[in-house]
Image 1 (spheres, rainbow, N blue to C red):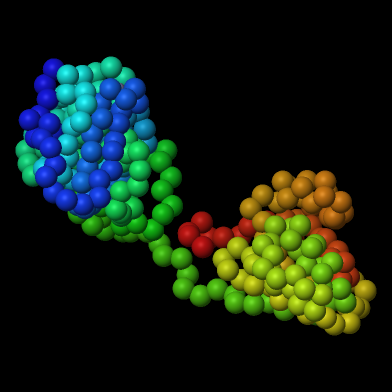
Image 2 (image 1 turned 180 degrees about the vertical axis):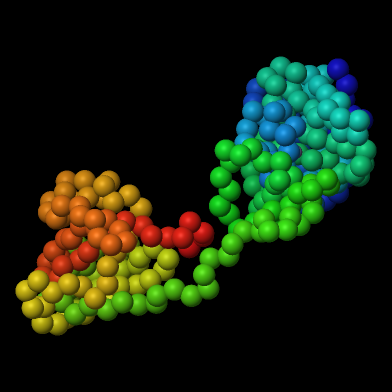
Length: 278
Ligand SMILES: [Zn+2]
Ligand SMILES: [Zn+2]
């Protein structure tokens, strides 16, 4: 068994500190903020070492990491010619990664902390080594290459489109009843008054309901709706007593229709996103 003298050093820097521990609690340590960075690592060694798709690490200056218990059970494995990984010899939890390439800081497994640190994960490193069954959809930078932290050409996340529909408006004879209907479809109620209804849709669009004449029988609402899983939504709306029509294919989608209490026919379509973030 091998432990680092630095890992046993007491922090002398004032500042907030956060405790971390292995699964069994034998190893206990404290980091004194600030941390240096926080990143998801997709390298094959992290993957194998943790049995996980990727591992989230933060960096801490060596003197800000203090081992409080378990120096006798902490095992260090020399995982490469420059790096070592330390784990609890009792429960196997991976805790620290050190490298002679960056001797002044230690990487610490974020998931071992008992409280929040001072930053969120801000990048993916060794992203080009990721497991091909890993589906990353966030908008963090994707770094890789030999060093693991080069900007990968053609790999940066697609930003979401910069604009979206702000408001759609519907005049209805019974604002409250129609608002309750749209809420049952999965919209978020922001206001529900007899003379004004406000509901929020995915993407931030707001539906405004205000008092008006009943539409001509069979009128289709001036907007349609989309759902992720058309069949599951159909089943849910059926169970909720909303009496959806049968699912029918149309030129671009599959769809069904619901009739709102206002009398408007509302078409519900299968998703047609491009596959890029929306
Ligand atoms: Zn342990
Ligand atoms: Zn790694």
